[in-house]
Image (cartoon, rainbow, N blue to C red):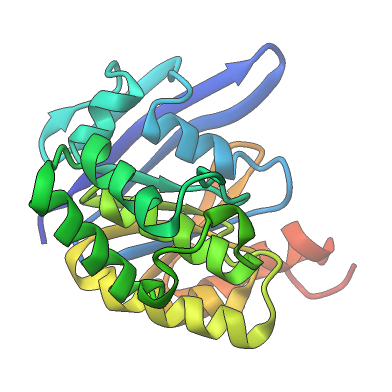
Length: 243
């Protein structure tokens, strides 16, 4: 399958701190790449580099055959890069529907009835249709998380970047969120940073492990999660299982 996203030789440092050290991977439409690693491993920085909030020192980011490394964030958004943040960032004074409409209008470039119809379709897909008229600032955490995902989806992305979107949710809420993400996976490429292993196992096709900005492992979820490398990074255990 031809990759939608190709990242090659991606490097970024802030002084002595390296957040991306020759990172490379490919991702096709219909695939979900889970990303794990300890705090400070460079996970969120990787998403910031792809979305354009941070400019790489070296390397290449190619989206559907087009180099986007030097493009500003709004150009990348119009080309199909959507982002959902760990801490939801709704327009609190606007309704749920109006939040989705802003994304549809300025992210997807839709107008009039097309923007309105698409916004409501996205709210249906994310379980928010019944709360369309509620103020975003009054939503409980699970619905703010859903709205964060809905805003990303409303921009009509081809690539969706999810940054610990399940953090802080109860187990039933995580299950509902995983189900929603699973329903849109077939039509998108997804990169999902998460610290909840079973959530990643449920959706991801592959998992990439970062440590100090460098990719140390990439492979099938079960194989990666059970690897000695992951045990050592997270728990300080050596390859033979002895601390």
